[in-house]
Image 1: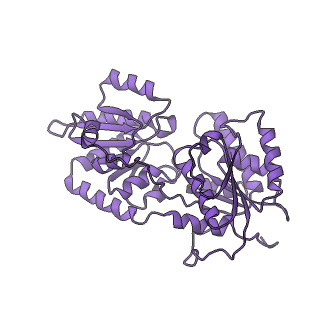
Image 2: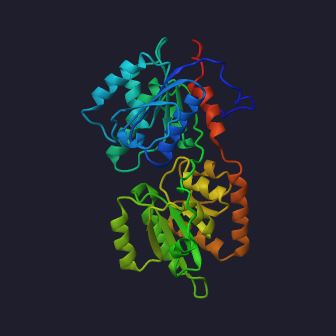
Length: 383
């Protein structure tokens, strides 16, 4: 795996104006923000940038000076993929660099451009996720990753486990992607104190999770850990575990929370996440896999005490600022209880979090990586 940026990485590229094609499929949250930031930063460096993505990704998007166009790449293989490949092949002939985001977009771009050869547009692929689910989902993800590894000039990945996989599959160059925390929009409105307080109404110990309500986020673990915490000895502060986010699992979660009387409150989608992070006693990530979790970065910047499952790229993202545990309910509950029941431990966790937050990457670090990797000249024949 290639090392990160060196001391001189912020030197401007040597004045070449390139034609860059940014491509992505279905993307939301941090992935969408990252794609838009790449297009915006490259355009700000006066390259000719075209961003191709599904309409929902482009809706209301700020791509800076980049041009945009709709390209329908869905989350699963479809008959429309042939037309996508044909379009990317045609546009790729006029591009100097194609930068694709995600396994689906990366593999389609790789098929469109063909193998690594002189005269072909350079292909850079950023892999944002590890497919989690059934055997077929995992197998398809492995096949897409293999196509990318065999044809891309450079593979950027969001976690060390993805880097190991890319190298094992034969990727020519691999390094960790720089994924800075995107700014959250608050629409210029200050959060109401009453709204923050109501998130934990009835609880003096405040636990918070910010996540999409989807299987990858380990919501079963969350409920089991909450049940264990609810059985803490008498005399401990009553606990409420607030969960900010929406998703397909909401209905099932509501049923289980109600049936078991768990101290978990589903807040739905919130626009005041920064204020919630600052008000929480402990912020918890229960995910089964993460790349560079944006919420962990936000919690570190807020100086919140963080407990997180040690999966994917979470440890690298946390930079020593979080308590990392195995993805087991007992481990999660034990780590949260240890902080809530010991003011000194809680204060120490907050200090470590704030120190780690000060070391997180920013958009200038992303600009450096784009200049080195996306805008870099093609390596010579000795590669």
